[in-house]
Structures are given as structure tokens and as C-alpha cells.
Length: 234
Image (cartoon, rainbow, N blue to C red; front, top):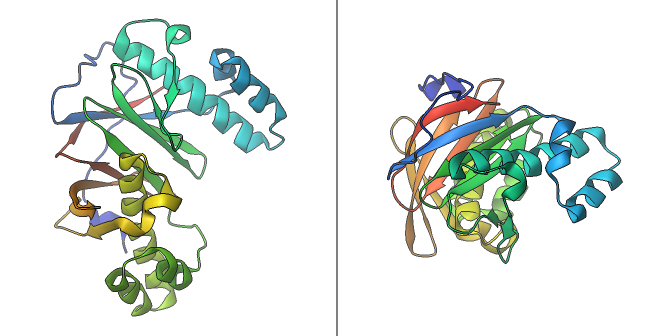
């Protein structure tokens, strides 16, 4: 798969002075620059976990993910980040009471979050990731998806596998069920351009793919059509 086949230009801004109202059917994508400064926004339990992480990469990613989410939620709720209470669903999906809806993903040192007025799921995958594409497809994909991967040579199989994977994982994150509880039930049907669709346990899923540069592929999943209307970095 060639990323440049996903013909969508992304222009990032800092979001300063932007109206962060989320209209029906739209979302905003945010990239969070990794920083330990976000650690001041962690809860006491999160701070203990942060301090016990030995890997520098994982440590800064954890601080940025948790503190950064509070920072962004606060912008939409017009409050201070310290006032944001992150809740967790049964399988660990974070949320805040009364919205907005959001989801977060990270890969290859980049951290992105999506915000919307409706539930969504976001996943990122680096196309340089080494995977045993055929074995994983046999374990987690539908028979037709696994057969598609098996029919390709090694290089093609890896690219196609990762494209399936990012759409399927975004779908399961949308559901809140967690990848080990629902990945086999997520189906992906590629459409024209960057808009695809799928199915999850009898429900139709809308999928939007993004070429995020640096060999990074992203997918956004939602129950109803949603379009990114803002791309911001902080």
C-alpha cells in the first residue's frame, strides 16, 4: 500500500483563537508534542505510575497522553485542566461526563487525539512496524481478510495487514470493548479514496483514513459519518 494514495492534505495549526465548538458530524484532530510538563496534571495514582515507569519513551508518552487529554478537554469545556475528571469505561476507554467525546492513540513517538460531539475511535500505525502479517491475520481477521493478506508477497502483505489493522483497532476503540474482546468482530471494507466503512457486531461503522506523514497511517471510526474540520498541534 502506498500512503500517497490517500490524497488528503493536512495543514496543522496551533488552534489559537479557533472556535472549538464541535458541530454535529465533525471532529478535530490534535497532535500533542511529548513533554514531561504534563505530569503536573496527573492524578495521584497516575503520578505514582508515571514515576515508576523506567522507559523514558513510555514515561513521557504517559504524561503527555493523560495530562494532554485534560488540557484539551479543558479547552472544550472552558475550565482549568485540573478541574477535568477523566473516567474509565469497563475496558479502560477514557471519557468525561457530559462530553466532549474523544479518543487518543500513539505510535512511533507521535501522539494524536480526536474530539467530536459523538463517539469515535482513533488508531495510528507506523508502516515501518515489523509484524508477522499472515499469522496475526489468521488469528484476528475474518476469513476473507486473512485470505487477502495470504495472497500477497511479504512486502505487500505487511502494508495491507497494517491498513486493515488500523481500521479494525479504531473500530474496536470506538466500541469501547478493547482489542482482545472485539478485534475479530471488526470488519473493514475499503472504499474510494480515504473513506471506507466496516461493521462491528451488526452495526455499520464509518472509517476515515489519514496519511499523517513520516510513514504514519491513521484511521478514525464512528457510528455516523464524521469529518475532520480542524488539525491542531500543541
